[in-house]
Length: 123
Image (cartoon, rainbow, N blue to C red):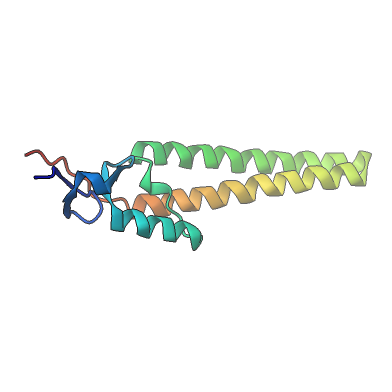
């Protein structure tokens, strides 16, 4: 008789041979397929492999990244005095830091909201 594992996402008992390990625990094949399709559709799946503590760390790093972008924008203002091309290049990098930090932070917050309630199941 095959060993059964409980999927932490759908809470179904499935054979161990049709599971994979994620950051939250065992995930069944249907849930894994849904996660793969969500990635292809561009939906955030950051929470599939990160626990709440790691998501909190991502959120803090993103805030620092956005603040670095603000500092870079201020530097761009000073660089425009020297050269408009240099100022524009620094301006673009600052805007990129802010946009990337905001986007990643938003994905981490979304992943934290949809975090599964993982439970340790022992038999």
